[in-house]
Amino acid sequence: MPAPDLILTPSLFFQHASCPHWLWYDRYGDPARKGDMPELAQKLLEMGVVHEENYIQGLDLQPVLTKNPDVAARETLRLMRQGAPLIYQGMLQAEIGGVLWRGRPDLLEKRPGRSAFGDWLYVPVDIKSSHSIHDVQQLQLAFYALVLEQVQGAFPEEAAIVNVDHERVPLTLTDALVRKTKKKADDVARILAGEKPPLRLASKCKHSPWFKECVRTAEEANDIALIYDLDPRAAVGLRAAGIATVRQAAAMDPASLGKIPYAPTHELLRIKRQAQSLTDGKLHWLARPQLPEAPLEIYFDIEGDPFLSVEYLFGFWIVGDPERRYANIGHVSDQGEDGYFLYFLAEQPEDQERLWRDFLAWTALLPDDGFAVYHFADYERARTLGLAKQYGDTPGFRRFAKRYVDLSKVVQDSVIFPLYFYSIKDIAKSKFLAYRWRHQKAGGAQSVFWYERWLETGDRCVLQDIVDYNEDDVVATAALHRWLVKEGARMV
Image (cartoon, rainbow, N blue to C red; front, side, top):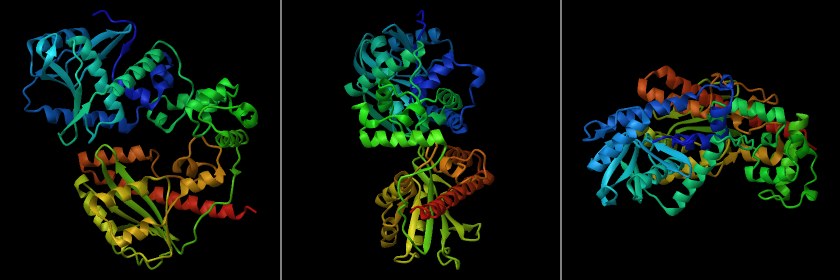
């Protein structure tokens, strides 16, 4: 099949979900400005290959071995016409709307039905190193189904993944999913054709090798994409109203703008203040931080692997327990001048329940009152409540859960930083706190990479990297708390 200039593949959906500019820069950008792929992304590709190889062992399948896409498509079509029960790495391609849709599902399964081949049709199945079907995977499966409709003259109503446990997870290909997939395909095709997406910075952009280039471009233009947590739909309205730069946003009069979609007046005021902070490089205080006083301060951070659906480390920095009364359970290390680090570790995914039981036993040691549990963002609260439903809870945990204090909410209610992102690392590493992590690549994604590597290699040095990173996280959380107390006390 002669291919049109534009070739749409399922992998482009993942790139678009991370950062639409990834697609544009790959096609039109300066290759010298492209950064490295994050180690976790590379690791997931390797894991997927290993998982796939393990699963297909012993299956009676017909592989399509050639790498040439047109030859592979012809070979796949030949096997489908013959009614091969299971085709491995078949190539599907069809021209849809002037764009060549091309994809290689891991498996094509023969099912009873009516198609151009006879009394059978094929459904797509992907082998994934995750437990459930993620959003992008749903789009990819629907992508294969739409191409199959062109190839075999029948649309499969169901697809599936084989998950990390070698379990089949089915997916119903609804009309809504098909519409969403077609819209995503149109968005991707426009970018491939040269339409550069509006500038936007989000945390997912950090997964792209072009992230630094996106930031550089936005800084050069002083673009409103630099404004933290700016809804991209609101950005469209602001640009239409003549507010395209941070300086313009800092000087805007929200009352005179009229209605901006997805940006009510209070949100426009927040955007204005954030822009002013970026412009002058200063903190802008909104209110005195509201923080409880407690003699025992517990700073909490969880490390979890979303691909394995496991929480593998609970870490705590304990302040106000000089006699270490609450250090009889768990691992303890690095006692500092004002506290010590305590953690619970699931060295293998199947150890998660044991970790939880040890954690519950530890919460029983805590006093009935007089302590606060500080964390940053909602992950710790949400995941512990989820594990309580899964494995059960205790009165000690219920007391513990009532004392959560989310410092990210305290920050957003009290102070505006001149930053593009408000993660604990962005805030703690800023000039206002100047906190530093021991490992240069420290981050949640890097922790997952290390855990996957630990499971593969058994290298305890890698396991120690995870522990050290978590300790740095909880100490950074404590540093932010102290900073909020100190700076908040200066407010009248």
